[in-house]
Image (cartoon, rainbow, N blue to C red; front, top):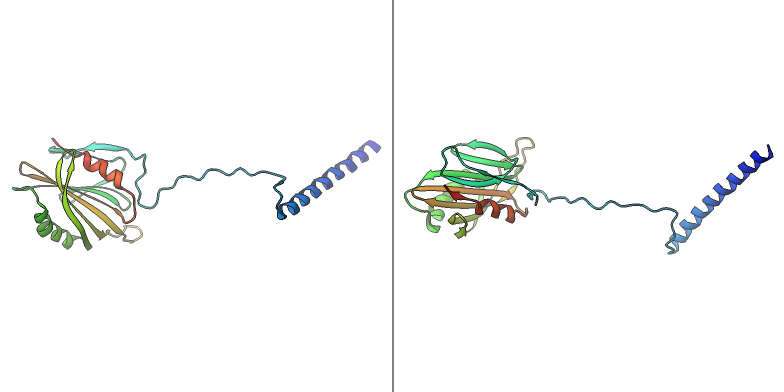
Amino acid sequence: MRRTLSAVVTGLVVVTGATACSSSSSSSGSSGSSHSSSSTTVAPPKEVNPAGDIPDDQVYVAWSPSGGGYTVKVPEGWARQQVGGATVFSDKFNSVRIDRSPADKAPTVQSVRSVDLPAVGRSAKNVTVEKVGTVKRSGGTAVLATYRADSAPDQVTGKSVRQDVERYAFWQNGTQVVLTLSGAVGADNVDPWQIVTDSFRWA
């Protein structure tokens, strides 16, 4: 019985001492001491892509229309749909639209400014043209028009966002293919859009 009582008393002393130590540590911490009764492991922050950014590890797959004629790489896993005569691959507010049409002449900066962009303005909302020029890609030279426009409303939320748009017009032997890439303003999609447009090849 004495041995049991002694153990209880000893336990109380240990507990009381631990409490005192904890109180002392708290008091010391408030006065600038670095002592602590416990340590906390902080997990490294998880990488988060800003809204609209395409992830760096996005995979791209080659795609070509049923009639052939050209190939282009598009982001794997994006939803695909037909919109009139165009094929559109999309994910949230990012999209790659591909249009093919007959054209007797190659597009020029002037023709894109005077004909193509006014047509874009009739089908899109709040179009603001930024610049039009020619660029070289692996598949050939294209006329590039950059502009901003409002996206179509989200089917679930009804929300519309302001978008940066890049429109590349390629031409060869009486056929024009236009790649239109769009994403939310502020999204860093320079590298993904470079991958897509540089992958274009006439077949």
